[in-house]
Amino acid sequence: MKLYDVRAVARFLDVSERRVRQLRDEKVIAEVRPGLYDLIDTNHRYINYLRKRNPEGDETIDYNTERAKLVRAKRKNEEYELQLKENQLHAAEDIEAVMTDMLVNFKSRLMAIPSKLAPVLCKKTDKAEIFALLKDHIDEALMELSDFKTTFGERVKEDEKSDG
Image (cartoon, rainbow, N blue to C red; front, top):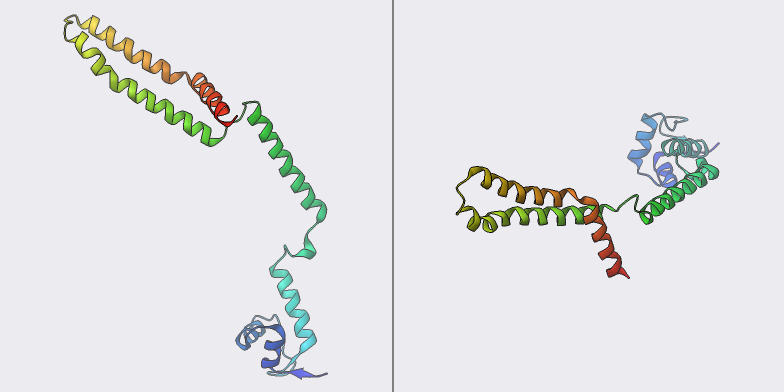
């Protein structure tokens, strides 16, 4: 049996001499005599060490398991596409755009109340009447904000027209 030194083993395994000594210290490879290694045994031990470190290697992949995962992923994707088409599921971008539009409109409505009611309210002296006018305008703005389905439906129709 021919024995090789650290330098030859390092060249054969394509690692540094220091790494060979580390592998020896980690008991991955073994010296036959101090500083000398059996190249075939060292190679086999190193390959087994690499296999254990990488359990997802080609040899351990089960084709049927991987195929099942792929089919499951495709099925889920098709289910999502169907839900999108049936308006049971909506894309995050669509929801974000609708919510932004709704909140901007709501803010505009609220910001317009003082300028809209100031001329009318300055002539009123009855607190109940002032309260009723303010409440009506605020309730109207809140009703618009609460009508999510209508606003979302209008947004979706506009998007469909611009895509078509």
